[in-house]
Length: 419
Image (tube, rainbow, N blue to C red; front, side, top):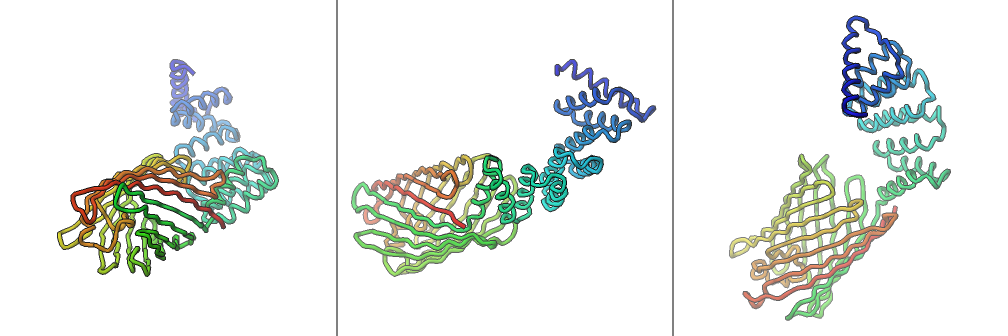
């Protein structure tokens, strides 16, 4: 519709509305007026469109197409209660309007009222038994109502009867991924040194499980350094405390000089407005003596990107050693598919585990600069996850302070999810 014609119609509608004070009832062709109102609604003149629709309904209260469209405009504007009343009026007049049932259910989903949406889907299915579109909305309502197992049962019903329903197949895949509570993974890393040391290796086998209280991760780390082999056992917990607040708790032990005898730590994470998150905590490593490391981070999600800065502060006899790392992630389809790059300065025995030999007082003050890049991706069914990273570090030599070597780091990982 051209701008001049649109202005003409708006003027005509407003003139008609102004006449309501005298006539209070619509006069004119309802079909023509409805067409104009739709044009107004789709051209960012929603209020004028709603006024004109209400005016038409004064004369034609059972014109269901008009009332249903009015309800949809309310829903688009976030006026979910108004929309609900109008949808119900239409459905009470004609319960065989599938498009109105779908719109009414979506109104409840958008208003974050999953149980009301589920109630409406039950009514809709009495009129349209086994309808795939309505069953799909029922599954969404069940998932939003914290019943993903029931949602999967509903979606399986659609896929079993019609495996070509692409929306249902895609949603089934998403639900099965959500319900994959168990993960087994392998990760191998190697550090190659420009001089002084032989290659150093770290291999990790892990098992994780999602619970209603948070996730639990058990790890076995196998290290080969200085022509010696050693094993460390660790447990990571991520308990959910309340909405927007969770924790990280770690404990580990080993009986080899390649790892600390004991390690433990804890950290609190808090969500903030504007998609920010902050954290604060500590790590403790016990070699010949215990080294305590204080850490904190700030993260920010923006669109498909994530920025995070983390610092480690390690008090020692000469003051405090400080290190910091800036990390950036660019997500693709979901959280399992992304590219990352990080920049860091300073040495921390928490993240530079390969290089910590038990000489705490000297090592925590080493100078170091590093850069790393990684790529992570999943299989089509999201069951298998892969990742690879490459890093480059310019680090001061432990026993030759003031001189540096280069460290070339490479890692690869694989995980599989299952129920």
